[in-house]
Image (cartoon, rainbow, N blue to C red; front, side, top):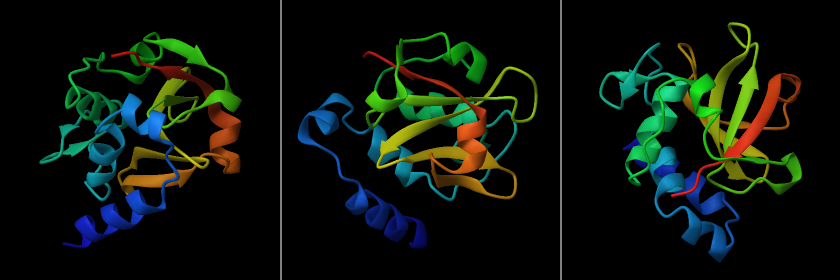
Length: 146
């Protein structure tokens, strides 16, 4: 019940423009519905838990979009997006978080926020994209076409 309430609050707070919501029907809603789900390294479902790439892959699969399993291979998909052109539903990637190279991914929500499977201690959460840690490790963004 608490997760459902949190989902409604987070969704209501998002300033989505109509064309952005139409471009990614269900992606943002599905991603936010899993806030609070446990983190599990190698995990790819809401019952057992997610890691970052498993979370992104599962969210996009609900919209019929198949993505590769790892953050590094997901970084090769779609087209590059400039930081100032980010739209809700774009993937944001980070490097050198727990290993060298592309090692973390999340889904941009708008308003400098993104949702991701953060860590064992934090689960699936919404974070500020402009926090110093994320800006320091930011590697790029990709827009996945349907």
